[in-house]
Every structure is written in C-alpha cells, then in structure tokens.
View 1 (cartoon, one colour):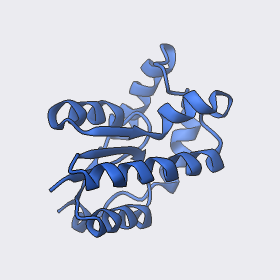
View 2: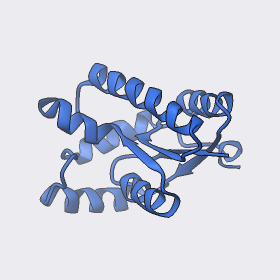
View 3: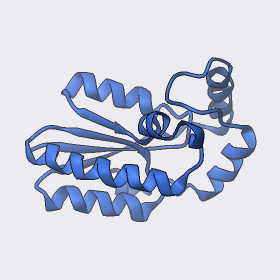
View 4: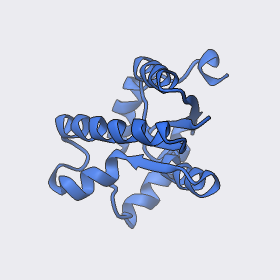
Length: 150
C-alpha cells in the first residue's frame, strides 16, 4: 500500500531535509510548494498565497495519480492546521493509500539558529525568514495532537 507522507512544521524545522531522506529511502516522489514557487513565481517567494494554493492543487492532482500507481509521495507543505491534515489523510485513504504525519517539533531558539544560518547562504528554492515572521507564524500554527501522531 503506498504511503502519503505529510510533513508538518514551521520553516527551518527540517521538512525539506526529511523529504529528501524519505525520497531516497522509499523511492518516493516529493512535492514542495516552495520549489515550484521559486520556479514559477520567483518574485512572489514567501508570499503569493493564491499562487501557492494553485500549486498545491496541481501537486495534489499529480500526487493522487502517483499514489494510485503504488508509489509513495511526500508533501513538503508544512501542514500548519489540523483541518488541512485531516483533509489530506482522508484523501489518501479514499484513494487506497495510507497517510503518515511527520511532525518536526523544533524549539523556537533552534528554529531561529537554523534560519540565521540558512538566511546567510540562502539555498535554492527558499526565501529568507525573519524572527518576526517565525513569531507571527507560530501563532497560526496548530501543533498536531497526540491522536494525530498515532
């Protein structure tokens, strides 16, 4: 049975690193909204919520087809809200796949250290993230509950 991996965490938590690890270990296909944003809308990196939603819609259409073919998929999207996590778990089950939530719970101080390093030598397909943004986004982020991590 193919697996849909949902990577959950704030910027700097290690989602993309984990995505690449799963890709290598499981021969999974990775979908990263940041990579597509960087290529399709470079001026909108870090912004462009409407564009991000379009990208995620196309990525999901393709991911669903790949899962139906029996290939594991990684969605490197962040999954900040329970509703979105529940929706994609249900979508996976509806097409005969299982879903696995991978929560990267990194303390604020560590996130900031990682982002300082990342911002100093920005990797391709990423954008700078400030301390103020982390503080704002942390308020929007719904950490998974224990029942989600079973």
